[in-house]
Image (cartoon, rainbow, N blue to C red; front, side, top):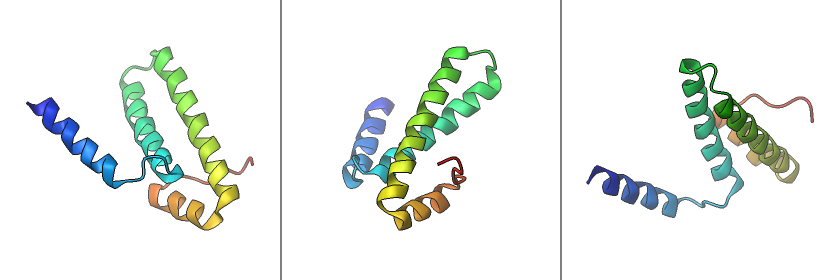
Length: 90
């Protein structure tokens, strides 16, 4: 019962949001990064999770780079809302 209610709530939230937008994807990657980071604090030698974290970080970085080139205002707003540091290397 709990699983079904959780699925329906998340589906309704996703239906309201634009799932394909860059902002939504960056938000979902940020949530995944936070979960993996907290997992790795407990399990330091989980190398597969470390690899997954690096892959998600790279995907988020590419999306943020794309958004910064496409629309700088939306990029700045997203960075400030999520409290992500701006990348200096690009």
